[in-house]
Image 1 (tube, rainbow, N blue to C red):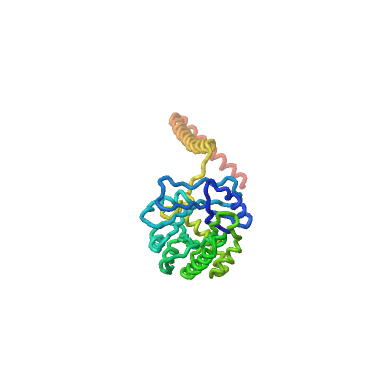
Image 2: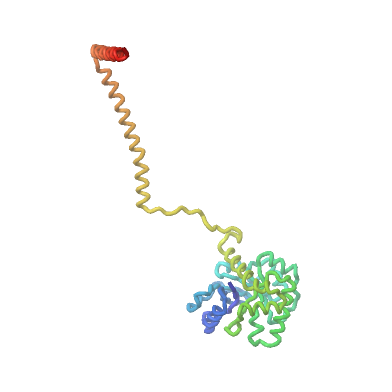
Length: 308
């Protein structure tokens, strides 16, 4: 599964259908449609509608790119995670990068590598972001689609310095291509990563495993409690149909009633026998006792004859 988590998109973009079809043809399975905003956040911010004619084999995500110059202007980052699948920050100076790495809630830090970055990357600052689950993104589209020699040179130099500072960890690679011509196949992207200083395994992880982790962590932040606890199965009882529940209730109620009826019949029969014995007179009782004795004596004489 190959991911491209940065494809610029607007609702009136005529090239988006061609770009998505081309991404599906060359092997990508998940694509994030990005929207870029600079400055203060508008009050009602929502992702644009997803294109209807997108290939069915692609899983489309929504993403917000926020250009960050002054962190104090953007205090609604936590609420944006509920509206967008991914939230990426693009710092423009070292102070905003430090704030994004240590304090701000986001999924990605995506720097503009087509321009010369006026500060050096520090391992301690970048490792703090990686420990928080934030990944750094390298976008190759600006250095491929004819932006000039300077943009290509800046892309290579900035990518190499980022890889060197992060020790090759926590990096993903995206296209940021506005047209299909700016997109490259997954194995071409891996070759680019090898040129920048990543190994082939790390290059493949940058468009497969690391990108999958980004989407999974972002989903966990949206659906779980504080990004740590998620209820997968709550142990709900299976629904029982009304007819079956009535039958079960009738059988359960019927069993105690039959037992109670049997007990009542036994209790009624026992007093009747006692009353019958009490109603016999003394003469009748003596006659029955004498008959029993005579029957016993007759049986004993018959036994003696047979023995002799």
